[in-house]
Length: 93
Image 1: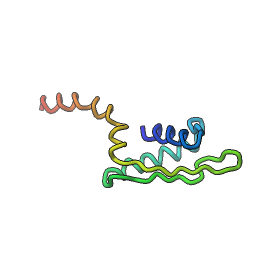
Image 2: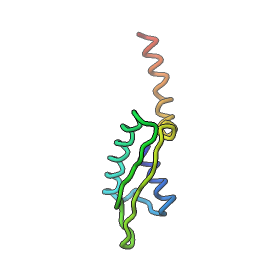
Image 3: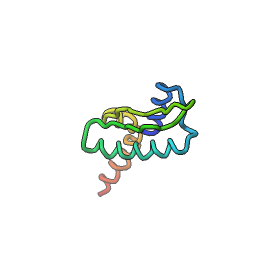
Image 4: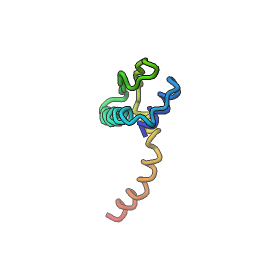
């Protein structure tokens, strides 16, 4: 979810779609995992990937902020899907 959000934001600002760039996707996946872990202890994190891709001999960098509220918004449907099974398991215990 974070990776998709980053890809969408990067495309909005740079008009470049990185979905077919395997190396960029790998770096984004690692950065998204790191950001997710950081958001456990802070309310906002920076995702900074220099030289994410090169277009027309020009390097494109990624520098974006992700806050906990946006992360929760991105994952809200996953949390909602888990709610009923968890409540059922607690009721059965």
